[in-house]
Image (cartoon, rainbow, N blue to C red; front, top):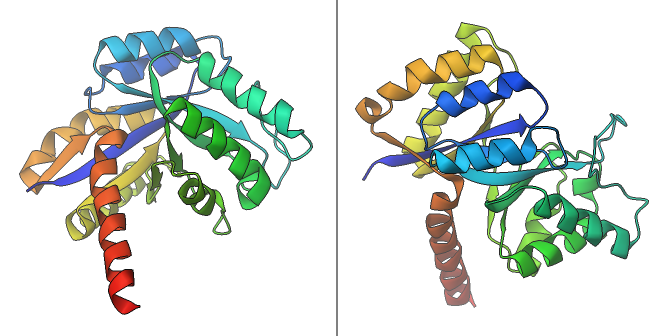
Length: 235
């Protein structure tokens, strides 16, 4: 059985150049920033081409960077926070899941992550932890609220030189073969899009299948069930 690779294209919604990502294979998952000039338009266009849609929810970072519209911070009340999440989801049609934009501060906090997962559970959405901090509590709260969870394993384009992009994709392919599946996050840079248009054609030869992020959830949930069974045996 082919190893599975999910590529999430983050940060969609502000630049007209983002539309170039629509030329990528439909197996790419688009994560779109809420309340952005092109957000709804890109969601509809990508969905029509067969892409899966996610909401890329801005969250407070340790360095205090500007989050943009719909940003979540640790000063919000529970009501404000949950309303902001619902509004963000409502601004992006066809969304099946969410992930965090930045969030190195907010994802470390139990209470806000619990509020987030409560809304996602109600909306029947999955969450991909972009893992912008190793101290993230998103996974614990997702488990508590029974929200399907994936975690980013590779960033493709922190550097956009050809050598760097090749290295990161090679790492993702290696992990996919080793673990059966991998989540890779990329951005709609011109260099990234040109690279992927060329390189993704070679994935089948390497025994790797490009899939939507949600396609990885059944295996992840099955592995979780197996771990629970093993834990019971240890009792």
